[in-house]
Image (cartoon, rainbow, N blue to C red; front, top):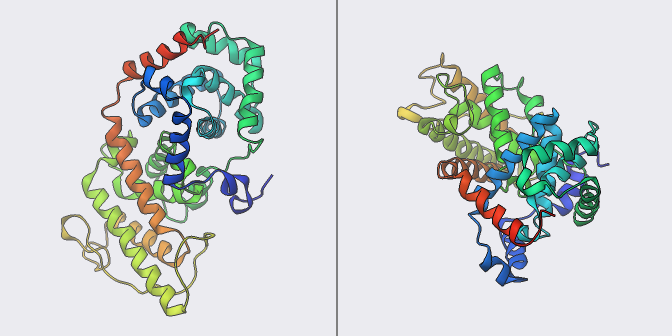
Amino acid sequence: MASNFWESTQRRYWQFTKDELAAMRQKLEDEDPNLVQMYPLPQLRHINIYLNQQFNRLAKRLGVRQQALATAQVYLKRFYTRVEIRRTNPYLLVATALYLACKMEECPQHIRLIVQEARGLWPETFHGQDTSKLGECEFFLISEMSSQLIVHQPYRTLTQLQGEFNLTPEESQAAWQAINDHYMTDLPLLYPPHIIGLTAILLAITCYNRQNTAGGANAAGNSGGLVMAANALAHAQAQSQARAAAMGGNSGPGTPNLTPQGSFAGGNFSSQGGRELGDGTNPSDPKIAKMQRFTKWLAESNIDIEGMIDCTQEIISFYDCHEQYEDLVVRDNIKRFIKARGLDK
């Protein structure tokens, strides 16, 4: 087991660029274009939302911890970079991934209980499955992932740094929810967990609305907060580049320095309503002060700020896409290829 992300199989084998990920998926579809044409599916984001809901439903019945649930979702994402979804029963894969993740995260569930609860949840598409089928699927899943089962999660970054940035309980919860939501995107296959964790903290600080404790998509819909987040990242990036130039080095992605040191060349940048976060216009505003601290910390560290910018855009884009999601459409399309190809037996 790798003691840190930088030495892990996750970083070496399961972190891709967007182009690489798109090429892998296109290759899977090109292997059998007739299958793809015969069973059209909604956009991938909507499929991810639906599968996330199925994971949550099964995990709730079993009382599974969030860490195991997150690991299971990563397993499924990895698997579907190697196997086209129309060749599988996604419900069986959801149950199998959760079963395997619980073992890996040291909170095992009995295989018979998993099958029993899955049958209760999905009677039409899981009724033909039994413990032997789930056991076979487990070996298939492990094989396609090349037995590389250790997953590093963004939750650790949040728990380590929530005190550093004086997050309120509500902001910590909003950041936790943003991390939960990112599993419905491609981000677990694109960026290191600390980048995603820091992005969640940024969104919690800038976009959390005290009048709306639901967090998630509604919190991220605060347009003024998004302006602040974008400006904060731009400011941190400029300061990081200036600091690197002064030291004769190059800024860019690398192993994060979680206890940044050195001086910070202060400066101003615009936020909502024309306020400047560095000019002391409203020093009593806790959000402004917190944002200043976060921006300074980023500028003094070796964090991939461009990666954070892309993560922020991806999460916000996902929330916009979520508004057009229709559960029935996705469910019917998945059920159609499962039944037509006899994958429920």
